[in-house]
Amino acid sequence: MSYKLLGEGLLIHSGRFNELPGIEAIVFDIDGTLVDVTRSYYFTIKLTTCILLDKLYGLRCKLGSDVDGVIKSLKMLGGFNNDWNTAATIIQAIFLHADHITKREQALGIIDIANYLTNIVEGESSPEYVKKSIEWLGETIQANFGKHLKIEDLESLMDQEAEKRGRIEALRELRNSLGPLTSYGSGLLTTLFEEVYLGEEGTRGKYGADPKYVRWQGAILNEELLIKEETLKELNELVPKGLAIVTGRGEWEAKKALEPLLHYFKLEPSVFIGDKVRGPEKPDPAGLIKCAKAMGAERVLYVGDSAEDLILVKRARERGLDAMFAGVLTNEHSFNFFIENGAEVIMEDVNDLPRALKREESLWRPF
Image 1 (tube, one colour):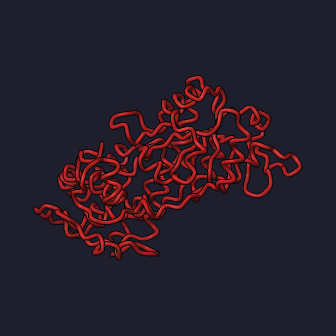
Image 2: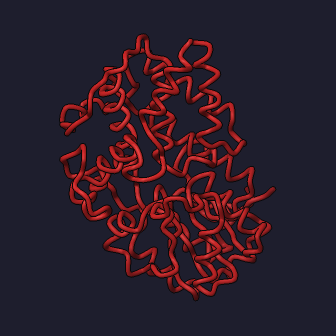
């Protein structure tokens, strides 16, 4: 499998090089592609984990950048588009490795977020059992790269570990305490997670409800745009059917993150999977197929940063859509995955995408 290196930081699949001008529409993922979520969703995963382990079991954790590495690894399994599942997985891994566990029988009540902000640290997680649990989870994930795993698959592996440690019943009790991972209000984890991420204003705006546990501004305000306005202007000039979005987010938080740039996207054909309680999640291709049809586009380019984004495109092709994939490199594992699975475009920066479509041959050399 060969690629053309089109200047710095941009690879194009040689076999699809001449097909790029035929792209009629570009559809974007949001998280990690258009928006930097390391200080919003990653932060929320870690903060929710710290709060629940403390409130439910008195386990005080400090979570560091090694957890970010695990989150990125989970994104390369193809079945962790939903961050509720990511948080639940990390909580269970730490619980399994705790020295002692004692269930607390108390209601959460209003949580003072300020008491937990210092639990999010630079460097390695602590205490030692937390560090070891993160290492174990990372090794377990990496041993399964190349497989399409969901939370149920990792929970099966954790059940095996729990049996060895005599904690299988306690682990099942923990899962029951976290509640269903289906929607805001469905369980403890989903409710707390959404309120930490959205904050008071966001919870009211998205769900029309006062927060049950949290009184603060929300991690969503920490998000920063990765895509530049001039990039979107140029892309709209390069493709005849325009730009749209297919994302695991809900529409409210998608619009909040992209507010200054929303007018560059066609929102009517866009798909916001997070608003569908029981709808198909990525990598199910239904959203992309629906979006392409609504745009009247026969050949589309989907831009994302994770395994499920590429798998989504492959499955869309199996169902008859002429789709290509452009992968943004956001972690150390994505490059090899994209190469091995034949991504049409691989780029270090989403703002390099116009260069890929223009294909300036004077810049390319074999890779």
